[in-house]
Image (cartoon, rainbow, N blue to C red; front, side, top):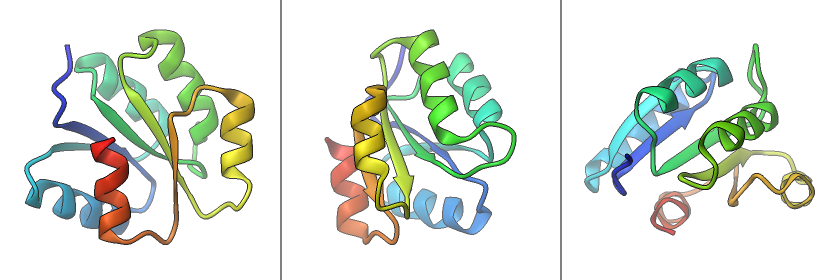
Length: 118
């Protein structure tokens, strides 16, 4: 079971995780983090998040692979948002079909809060 306020932030940049956690916690979200796709899958198995903010470029398992694995294990029980600087992420997300939204880096606080609230 997931809480609508539960967000899993997955990124190999600890500074970005820290900033995103601070922003989301300041408005009441419960935020967990993982530094790669394998950790994200383990965290989601322990408690299914409502939203996964998922970086694309990570060691061990990239964001696309992680998204496919999360969908195969959890179906549509969580929203998956790809967070990337890639200009082609939206097209790839539409092609893969496992992604609910794309948040382009760099993003501002309002964009982050908007994508999580949807």
